[in-house]
Length: 146
Image 1 (cartoon, rainbow, N blue to C red):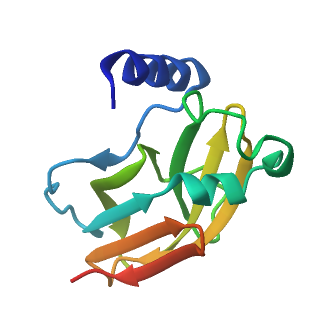
Image 2: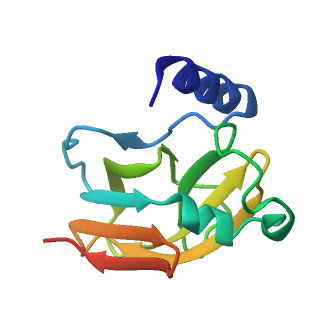
């Protein structure tokens, strides 16, 4: 990502409270009751285009440069807003999260900017140590990593 664009995205995220939380780019030390899970995400522009609220009017006109895309993990069955949040860039994204044992986390993708949307992606749990998520024109796919 170009430095000016990255700076603008970080400023937008910081002003909206969308900085990363509860994630690490290095494998964190596991704590009592928590398991480290590696998450690999491939985010393609075609997916965002197909899930935007104004997709048809702006499909080929609106640039993607001012859109912010975040992936959230939410502990199922809790009132917690979210357990972790990761700002995504176009293409590959790799990070680690700590997930409570015996807990499922629901995944949601939030798109903000000239294109808006909130998509329920699926769920993961601490039994999975490596997760791959693909956001393509064909849809969202979650599968155990290799």
